[in-house]
Length: 240
Figure (tube, rainbow, N blue to C red):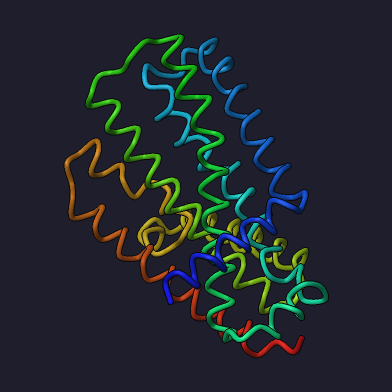
């Protein structure tokens, strides 16, 4: 079963690479990472450039990239290859999870394409960081990958329910803006919104508050489960 899932995920990831969207997103991510090195060095943003870059990119660029990828992860195949995939001796649930895992791997690659040039540039411009700064950067990178994967799962679910990648992306953006506005107006509600989860590691890294980080991680896990279940229900109901 695990081997079959690995093979399906690998095949779905190859299909994503055969398309143009993932290639464009990876290229843009790499360019943004390179540009951030020069901009960050000129503006002297921080001694730990990778850490600062991840925090800033999580606010705008990565959510948009994950929305663009997640909104078309499965909806774009409704009238294409997915009809042939459904003829294979595998269940819809199995096919859904294979596509989702492939999307999560693609999302992680996008984050890495931004992070790697920034990390290499910081080594060239600023030298080897302190072990504590390096550990904080790696922790933020892991958090960025988890958070980006969450956005992909939720955007995919929205697109499956509305039946259109374009409409799904627009709805996801509107929901993101609405949660951001409500979070600013009602700070006590902000911890329940996905817009706040980009900072889930900061209480642990900077204040030693493990309880707050664990609490936010539990909310992220709950959203992962909810987004996956809702997406699977929409995938099962769709007539191909």
